[in-house]
Structure formats: structure tokens, C-alpha cells
Image 1 (cartoon, rainbow, N blue to C red):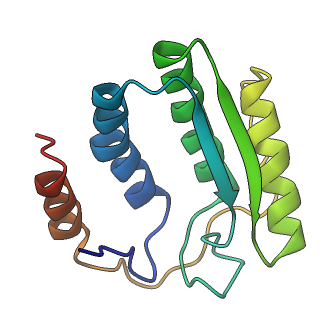
Image 2 (image 1 turned 90 degrees about the vertical axis):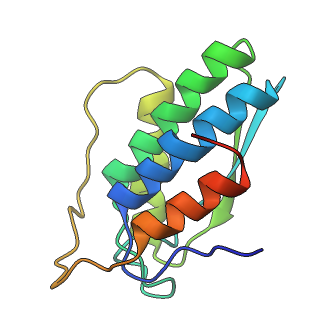
Length: 137
């Protein structure tokens, strides 16, 4: 069963998915290594994916993964660059992730947030369906 993210979803939805699905499933799985294929096309300025994530959101996701790696697998965490089509987004996001990994508290987001006219609907139903599939309460 496929549950793709819908156009317009951003930081709030990605962070909820991380906290409500990824973290509990990872804790149940107990990985020896966390490998991240880091793509930045969900950024609002990268129009191909039509999402609204931000550099700050990518940094917050990286922090969740860093904390999870420290908890579960002695900090073993590998990021590989998957892609993104806006070079400024990619550069800013990579810098923000390095800042998180190096323990820098302040994240620089030169692009800021998207100006979205309305919030897309359906996320609550989406996340609940995924949680049912993965037996996450």
C-alpha cells in the first residue's frame, strides 16, 4: 500500500511523521546504523515536488535522526546526498544539517518559509493510516 505525501505539505507534516511513525518504528527495529538518503526537493523553493518544507525543517529532521542514532546505535548515522533541483536550497540545507551534526544550536535559513495561501488537508487521516499499518499507537 502506497501513502505518498500530498503537494503542499511541509515541516509540520514531515516532523509529525518522523515523531509519530519513524521514531517508534526505529525504536522497535533497533538499527545498528541509520542511513539517510537526504533529498531536498520537498523544499518550497524547489518547485518540482510542490511541497513546503524549509531549511529549518530539514535541520529539525536531522536533529531527530541524530538523537535517535545516539539512543539506538552509538551515534552511527550516515547521510548521503540524494538530490534537489535548486542549488541554493541544497547548499543551505546541507550546511544546516552539518550545523546540527556539529552541535551548533543556531540554524541559518536564508530562504525562510513558503507563502502558502491555504493549508492542504488530509494529513491526519494519512498519518493515522500509516500508524495502523505499522502498528504504532
